Length: 114
Image (cartoon, rainbow, N blue to C red; front, top):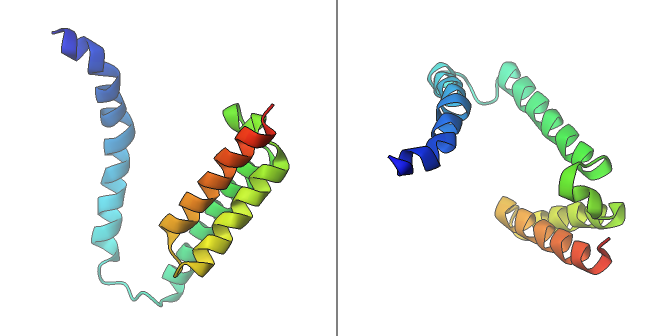
């Protein structure tokens, strides 16, 4: 019983946070099956999703919260630029871009620290 008491927050997180989102993802897959990938609707949705992601990244760089506040703006911008360059140079690999960006962010944060 102590195991249940110890892990109940994770169970609540899965039931309330993860599963309700997964329902919408599955429904999206079901309804998008017959759509043409190059249709105007899909291109618009892709553009909106890209714009939202760019806005979130810009907000994290320009006005971060939490532990990211301790990292100077110049390091955050350099990490984003390094990640983008790595993405472009290493066969458009998202993994490489994230890895290089994180390495620059962590290294720069340690060097320039508070």
